[in-house]
Image 1: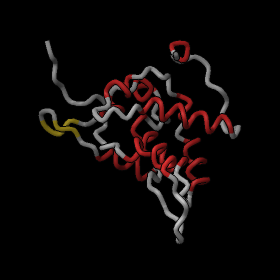
Image 2: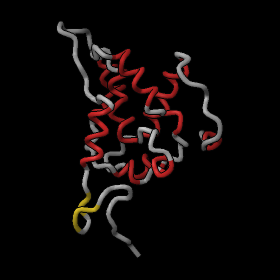
Image 3: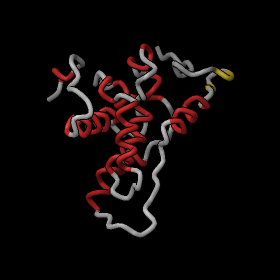
Length: 157
């Protein structure tokens, strides 16, 4: 049997149609946009490959709807916001890169349990969990967060 229902965590407007306004407000609140330098900067093919998945997000919200952490902790940015944030902290063309890293710390990627629900549910197969893991590694490397305890890391191969 297949069950079809509106996305979890969103206000239902009608039938299966949900309101994405809160999602867009959250993206605005966390400044999820790139601000380029005035002059052109070198941009290598490797840089593009590293951030291309983040650019391909279609803002459907399915990843947030299946995230167990968002159900219990609203301070967690969620897979969608963190996927969109990935390009901000790893794209060398972002003039606000350091500010983006500081803001990333405030949306707590370390709260991710790495359950992979978001990656399994993503219709574009962007693997948000892997992007979140990269953001966590960056913050750990810079000493901005402590290594999280628990989660599903014991399942990593």
